[in-house]
Length: 209
Length: 209
DNA sequence: AATTTTTATGATCGTTCGGTCAGAAAAGAC
DNA sequence: GTCTTTTCTGACCGAACGATCATAAAAATT
Image 1 (tube, protein in one colour):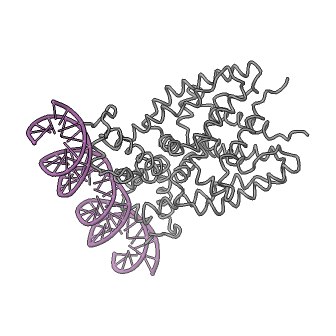
Image 2 (cartoon, rainbow over the protein chains, first blue to last red):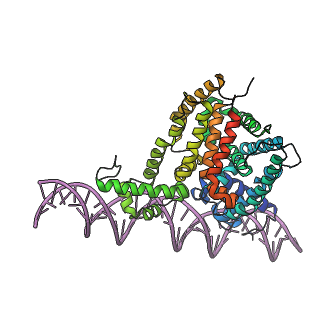
């Protein structure tokens, strides 16, 4: 008897809870938590509503599980920014990976955006704890790059914010981006990478003197 | 008998519909459309639920009115970017005004973000019509600045996207920004302006050659 | 094949929600 | 002060929603 299923044990549990989470991601990311219904998720998953609730205790439980999984991988690109590398190239690389995530995992980005927009009621602890700590660490790395003269002077925290904002914009505001670009919309991610690389390269290249 | 009240006529209608819209902005921007209830809005407005519906036909009608009012003023900062001015300073000025709006009207920004995140179901026409047109016009201005050599070569559309993304980030993701900044959070808008000015100034200053 | 365990469902419950309505109260017109 | 119009409210309705439960079907175990 699952319910509060620690982790899927049987073959069927793996399959079904996977289907449910996939369907829930699709629905939650499009309509937000309150805007989504269990019936929608059940239909998208190809299961009956009571069967959904056989695998998860509640709507909340499904949502929490998704956020939990998301936070595991969400910060990988930032983690893999290494102090040993070339400063500008490490940051550009971070921008590129983050933009690829916006392109390849827009639903995860929108799920996150929805949660933060509502004031992060379910993940505030993760934000003010582990996330803040990681950002502080990486900001220190950036500070060292600046002191070493391999990066133009700038505010590390706000630099990271700006990278988040600009890359996630292409996932969260995709409808607007596509509508405004019109015919050029299909090249939006390539163009965005070109633009962002240029922007950060010229802004971050160490200034002489 | 109001209902589909074209525009408030009597003194009481002006007062009450104003209260309702103010309350609805507060509630909708925090919980999204589906996440908000008429009871919440009624309580925030200090009115009974049936009394709300005396002034507005439906929950949808309140929401639509808010979006309509929002779109009127939302694009003013972009409109006031003038081709006659100094290119870099015009763009920095636009960034500053947009950031001030994020600081002073965060609820409007979040209302807009919620709508776009859900796929802009109610304002897609405004996005693909008037908004696209305005962006195309201003992009042409930026192109001319580039041709004239007063701005570094860059993609005008994506430049505008990046300004939207970074400034609205400080409204829409404020919880995260504050949590990550910790003690420095109270200076976040000043620091953001300093950072963004520097970023765009060094990236947009025309390169020689 | 028999038995146990897991998986699935139809029916249904209690709440919440958007919205209605008849009529009361207040405001304005004369 | 009377009458008319506007404003407001308590009670209520139907639909949607999250969740439960008794029981049936399917899988796994022996």
